[in-house]
Image (cartoon, rainbow, N blue to C red; front, side, top):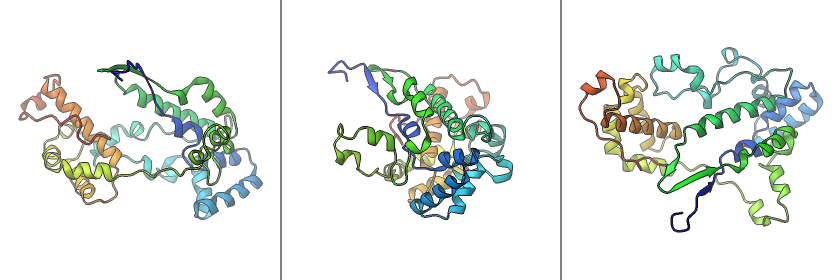
Length: 285
């Protein structure tokens, strides 16, 4: 970037969320249920059940639960707070930790549009946490979050975006004859956790020390014992919330840098022994 004098970076953030990159039929099925199109709903449940290799009754339950309060149907696993967070902290901030999730309304805007707005709000919160870069100096642009594009994608029927066995269906069909077929039909690479797991093993000695003397614990955010247990599981290759774990360690690194500069005003923190800040590239993704 420096050698070529580039000042703008195009980011693909939002692509999966707005073009149908997440291969789920639930928004479409919710629209059919809310509009009382039961015959079409039954047909789509059958088609997607075959594609997903799961009973159609399970799909119907996932569809219906979006209209019921979480106190009755429970919270989906992917929205539950990380198990290493302090219980009191979770209790005080449950709404934020669950992404300000609200149940869909049967009347009014289609459920898929309600979900789009909720997803966009989450992206907005994510982007506000992205600090500007000065070395080298550049700015990010987000083509998938262009207002006119979003207005179009939020207005068309959901089944145009995701179809059984085909994610980003509309974009793929629109690019036929422009993008090579081999590229359009390629399979998506699954998320690989080997990199973060390898990072846990490589940084194990420092991570053990960090997990025993955490500022996050002093502030009542993290339970050290539970975090240590999860780190051990990650080191052994077990399934863990690796993205959330990485974010927790980054927050700890940020707090340690603030503490090292004397910015944190907490008397309790100042009484602690000096702690080495986590290396900037540790656990990076």
